[in-house]
Image 1 (spheres, rainbow, N blue to C red):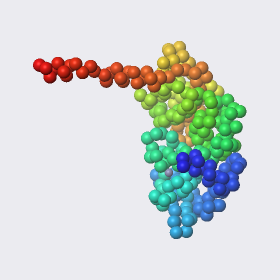
Image 2 (tube, rainbow, N blue to C red):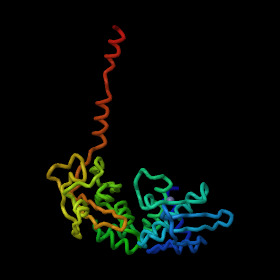
Image 3 (cartoon, protein in one colour):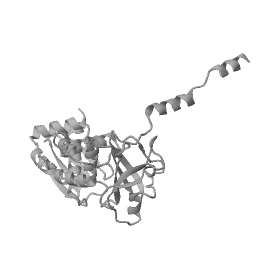
Image 4 (cartoon, helix red, strand yellow):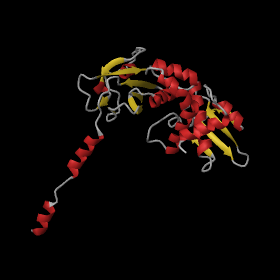
Length: 286
Ligand SMILES: [Zn+2]
């Protein structure tokens, strides 16, 4: 079963059908002790006592945002549901929780996917997303309904929405990771991994207060693709630095900018690798 299916059957078993889903309540129902404590190097810990079926979830008391706490508990509940046969102790760092970088441990990625579905179930969230336009105003409104962080809510919005959107998370001007919708076709510039000048995110790192709406910026400052010409523009909305020192940037490709087609890449590779065999034959003859 995939993590989304695991989470939705878990909710069904618990008989939970309404937002906000309160993970501490779930812990109580399952007999899992919940506490907040000083944790060094970790944001969330799950310890299970297999003979009793009980366990303990502890969340770092330095996390101030309730949405982030909820996601951390839900992440640990993901380990509880999916990974408890292999391990009984889980120590999860702030870098992996709420991160959708493909480079992180697959078990951690799966626990994040479980947490997203648990707190923002598709059957409840999809109709809410369908009725709304992209933007941080929408994401903030949804985050209040589901009691989730802006990062987690933005990812959920992107995954469920038909709009071509991309979330880019950066810190100290460095792009950490990005997450885009299926319909967002261009590539995000990750080669230099630094936020370019002439973007709203760059201005925030320079100390500017960002506007609270989308603004047009040169598309080539963020993305590349067939349709990205020097004059092509894209909508950017970046938020002020959050408590993790990150800038969250939302790109909205309203015009449907073309990316690089997979077929183009294939032709290019095929051309480079293909060599006629005559050279080897003639060498052998000589
Ligand atoms: Zn974990």
